Image (tube, rainbow, N blue to C red; front, side, top):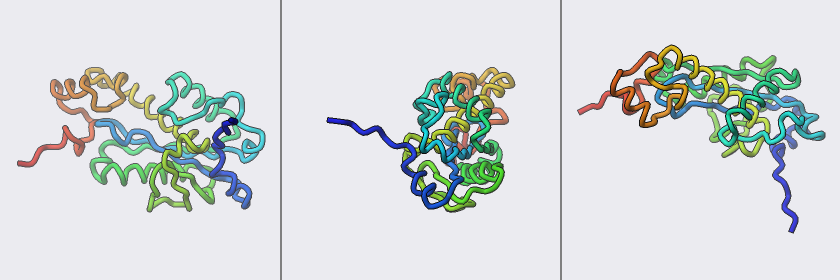
Length: 214
C-alpha cells in the first residue's frame, strides 16, 4: 500500500489557482498562560513554493508545538530573513487582556499582525475557529498549524516571539521562573505566585489570580 504524503498547501492551492496570490496564514501563541502577552503572527508564503516545494531550510515545518526550540529558532531566522516571506507580528499585553478578555485580545493581535503586512491580503487561513472580527476574508482550519504551511509559518513566528519576550521578562522578574514555563500555570509558577504575589505581567482575570467572590 502506498501512503500519500499530506499536502500542506491543500488550502492554499485553490486560492492560488483562482488568482489569489497573497494568502496569509494566521496563528497565535499564549492564550492559556497566566502571564505575559498574547502574540499573533501573519505569514504569506510565495505561491511558487506550491510548485517547487519548501526551501530546504524549512524542511519539516510544522505546528510550532511539535518542534524543538532549536528547530523553531532556525525556522524563525529563515522566515524573517529570506526576503520571500511577508510577515507581521503583534502582541497584546496582559493589561489589555484583563481589560477586554483573552478572546478579544487574541483577535485584536491577529488583526494587528495582518495590518503590519505591506498590504492587507485578499484572504487569510486561520488556525482554529472563525474569527468574526477578522479584517479580511478567511478560511478557518481546525488544527491548521499542522495542515497548512502558511499557518505553520505564522505559528513559528508567534511562538518564538512570545518565548523571547518571556525570556526578557524572566530577567526582569527572576523569582517567577518565566524562562522555564513561559507563564503557564505550572506548579513552580503557582508556588512563586503564592510566595511573591503577582507582578505587572500577570493576567489578573485568570484563575488563580482572579479574586474569588464569596
